[in-house]
Length: 385
Image (cartoon, rainbow, N blue to C red):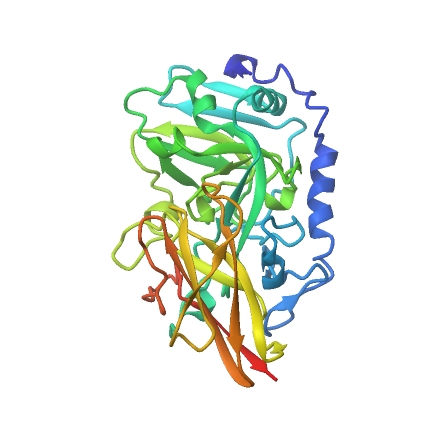
């Protein structure tokens, strides 16, 4: 690591991940997607990888629900979301600069961060990321802008990185550095469109947030924010800035459009942490299942962790407690499973999560004009024979 006067000292280093590697990593994940395009105003198109494409450019695609049966989501099934798409021009050597209200600006090379990661106490950890608009397409709204997600704009990967607080420590935050604003390499298509820029409070930055350089044990694909992205466990995905190049310490929250006006609930409050929510990954909607004992499984998550999941096989008239699998991993969803009895005919499966703070997933979330935070109970109709 080095201060800004020596920012170019390692301009040709990072042998573990070259510019060519970055491009290949992005193409490897996106390669299966480019053959599938949405023509005209038709519905979503499935890609060869199984991702459901909501927008072809910039690519917005949600994970297929059956892929969410696994505790860890493979990169080719991990949902994809960005406002402007991945950057098309990459530097020869990636750096991350911390500046603003600091004792001195500091610039880290990619190798610096990997070295800190290897020496640090932060191990690879699973973290669930969910788009704030996940479920927007199933809200009953007369009209709303934004991607019309159903339920698959959520995924979990194992991320390896360095606590953001450790990177800020060398720069020395001043007492009035109350917010940290994240800048990325992606650019808006037109100069009149504001950059996408988000900030997080100081206590969050010094708490659980970290800068990741690996996803599921390999360099983060370009499509998913590589080579460096922020991970903010418990917060909706827009806080976990992709293609991270700068962290600006500021006295106040960012006044960027996507903070001051975008991502706001109806009462004006900011969209921040994830709500208690569960998704049924098996069986899928409209599946034909035999009468008798049926195994239902899925994932549940919340900013505070999951206390319980209850499942109904009769449209909510009665509920059965699901078994939570594994141990609680802060910031990651919890796999659950349960056996229910179903009789011949039509049945509606429902899953309801309760989080560690006592929050309960509602039958129907209150709509808001932006379509944010829809944590309505997942209802899955099946045919029993």
